[in-house]
Length: 480
Picture (cartoon, rainbow, N blue to C red):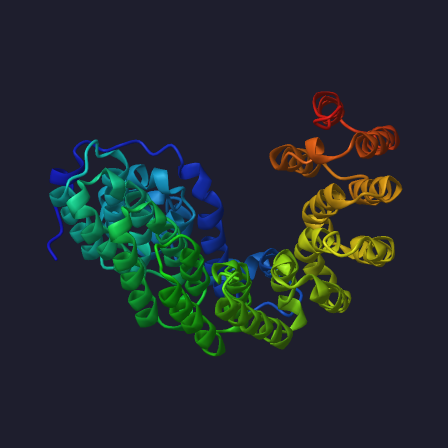
């Protein structure tokens, strides 16, 4: 591969204002070299301590003649490998300036600079056409280091819709394939994002693109196992007739055994949420639904408990698919499974289990909500939002005003001492779900009392207090 001369490519040298950000890297490298010269330090002795332990005479003896007369090491003297290490700590937007600092940095950072240039072209081109896109993809592939091409693909793939329609599929397929060749941590988000755009394609293009992605993931190997859940999600959006839907669903179920545990958990969660795709009005479809529902229950229980939380929550969310007479036993089984989970799995469960509970006959409500209270107290702080929203959402299905107020009280107690971000997220979710208008006037009066008690007992910021008071004053039941 020919290298463009520095003078022809970069023009005038650019000043790099971010060199001071690299001092830590340079200092670390220099210290490592000094420690190497000083000899290995005993365990527990730092590099600076090892150097200090040397006598002045010993250090002088180790220094070559004329050492004192030498000038200090500057950025210009750094070897290429150190320059490249500095580049890994430099913001990507500054790579152009860093690589243009000197002739040496230009050639040392040749591949990194080409990646930066491709990123700039992908981000700044005013109008994409097939020719410019193919030229840009050719350039990305010529970079030679797959990890460097990922940043350009991240910018380029969302712009596929700008292409004329007849060229979009070709560009999509090529970028998807290229994303499979970059390091997994960079390629997976690109591919997941691209899969999520398939429902936005013209209806006649959706199934062919789904088939292409299916084959591409199979060729990618185990490192891309998390993509199967993203692909399964598409089944709810694609124009599939019932026989094709069941064939695809069955194929995903058959694939579970070959996946690693995290990918199994994600795919099971998706497959559970896809169960409504089987029409329960048809007796044959109803039997198929029941069969797959039992199969998903079995798969959830095969998972290690540290991966069961989200799938159990999904089963609770789909409890309405079961005949009414089967719901209580199924719910109690899910609650029993939840009680055995580690604390960090309880948030996704409590996001859905309370709303499953209120679908049971009323005589179960009080006792089962009491059994949820110990689970709520075990929820990790980073999952409070999910648990609180799940509990509050369930009050819509309660006829017992006293029990409804108790649920609001217990949910809000989880938020005692939480930060503004957590509190704001909960309030915003309640507004988004339009929860309060579905409450009775008596339920809302109890909820307001608990909200005011929460405000009174917590040292809230002015912003949080205003947020809650606005929520109380601006929302209310429809029949209020």
